[in-house]
Length: 399
Image 1 (cartoon, rainbow, N blue to C red):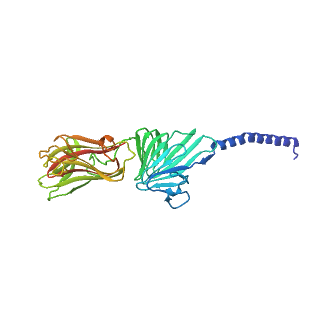
Image 2 (spheres, rainbow, N blue to C red):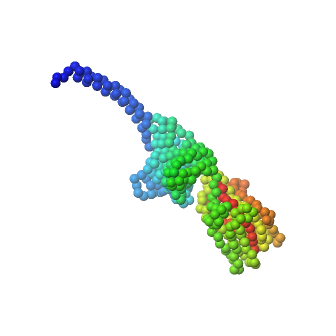
Image 3 (cartoon, rainbow, N blue to C red):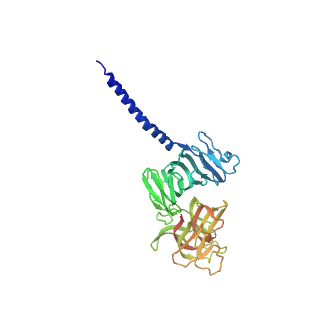
């Protein structure tokens, strides 16, 4: 078979021309794509506010004291990067300062890893931040973007959270993730589905469950309406000066589910109480309102008793203040003081009528100084000789 040399030459010529045209187009596009999308890692600065912060650097197995990594000549800044893990221990706090102006405040007993901190190298096209919250509590203050686009992601074991400009509290504990939107908006995706949150909304995500939109205000008390009996509460008596104990049982009073405190036939002291452990840091809340609805029926001792501490109903909250000292908030309620006994921390209420008490632990007008920072436990009790009272709607509304 003979070949046509002219046809072969033209074929080669056209193929070469087409190859040239492709290269003329693709090479500039490729160069442009590279320069447009090339990214570089950015460092994150860590400021230790108090206590000890531990750092596990990328590729290492052990934690070191982050304070030992301070930049020469700088009293505060510690530079960390992608792959590094930070852990605050008890009573320590720190702030991550991010390259885009955002910051992440770390509460005690919190672990975060810096998975991505990148920005486009040659322009301001994009930024990518991924801060994984493994456990604990963090406040994310997300600044306005400094690039044309920005992805700010906070993964947790239960969820992937996309943050936009705004302020967010994220808590990861007990196999669940809680997020509160103080301002801005967030997209939350769990294994069971997703939800969009805006200002003053929150959600909780458990494994394999769909997150739900909830109001930002939350009750830190479990079963404070006693709809589930005394579940979540420990019930006991203490200080019995004779073998007559008081009782605490749940029933219906005036159409309300309430706990009924009762002691009769006694001539000496006893206290019947309900106890619930809290263990809750409240420093990231703007308001924490302690409240209770109560009805006083009988008190054989006047006022608060001889030493001003025995009331037919009282509420007792133990907490740590801003200086890590332990303190109590106590409010007693009584309806008569015929013997003019002391009423330290007491409040006069009408007999046989439902009343509501509430105090904001963080409001300056409440005059709780120093300010509470960590709630340890709460008790609702009845004390004295003979007493009868009802209580319900025990609450600690935080937001």
